Amino acid sequence: MRLKTGMSVKVISGNHKGKEGKILRIIKDRNRVIIEGVNLIKKHTRPTQENPKGGIVEREGSLHISNVMHLHNGNHSRIGYKRLEDGSKVRVSTKSGEEIKE
Image (cartoon, rainbow, N blue to C red):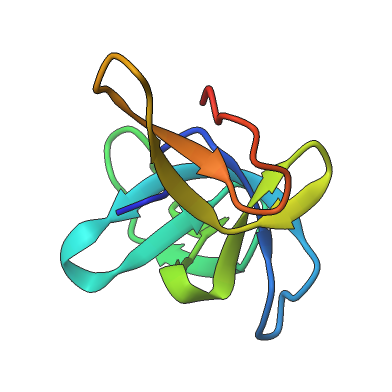
C-alpha cells in the first residue's frame, strides 16, 4: 500500500472529484480509505446512555483507494520507490522526483 494515514490526497474520480483532505483511516482488506471532510454520510444513531436523544450524525464514508492520488506541493502524482546509496528504499513523487517525507 503506497498511501499512509495522515497523507494529504486529492480525489480524482467519482462524485467527490477535485476534493482534497487528509487520510484518517485505511481499510486494507477492502482497499478503501476514509478522507477528512470528503464523502460525508448521515448515520442514524440509537439513543444510548452517552447520547440519550440519539439522532442523525454526519461522518465520513469510505472511498476506493484507486480514486485518490497523493498531493505533493499542490500537485497530485503517483508514488514510486527509489533505492539510495546506503541500500534503503524511499518513496518518491513520480512527477517531481522529490522524496516524500510523510
